Image: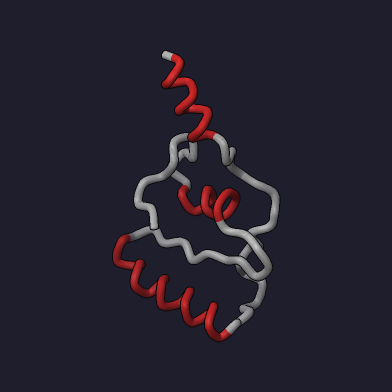
Length: 83
């Protein structure tokens, strides 16, 4: 679990994970906005994974088009190393 957003993600850690980290059939994430939501989000994710619960399509599939550059951190690091 990462608390900091990768460089170049624009602070959108949920988009970074959705587009660059998770994947596979039935992959999903439960984003949180406040630290207090963490315990409930973990519980929800575990219950859904164990029960193989498929909710109505309110959740966008992880396999959709990327909205963030997955190499933004590497690009920023490379620029920093050159200077």
